[in-house]
Amino acid sequence: MDTDLATSLVTAQATSTRFSAQVAIVKANHEMELALAQMADQAARAAPPPGQGARVDKFA
Image (cartoon, rainbow, N blue to C red; front, side):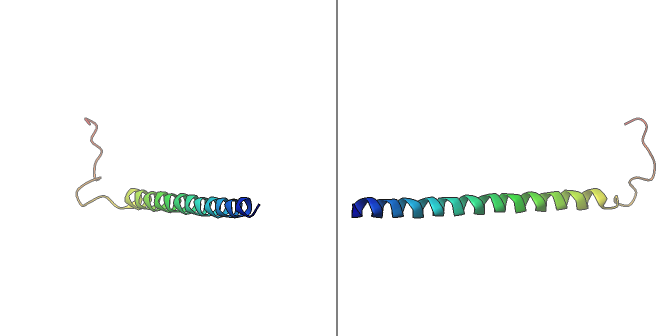
């Protein structure tokens, strides 16, 4: 009976640790996606380099 209780406790601890690791991974991925979105937004809002964007090239 003690072995079953010990096994159950070890299994519960392992499950808890696995869940915590999964949450940390999802959180890190989400933060990385936000950082990439912010970088893309900054690049899109940035002014074009000098000499570009002055005229529309209709042959392109």
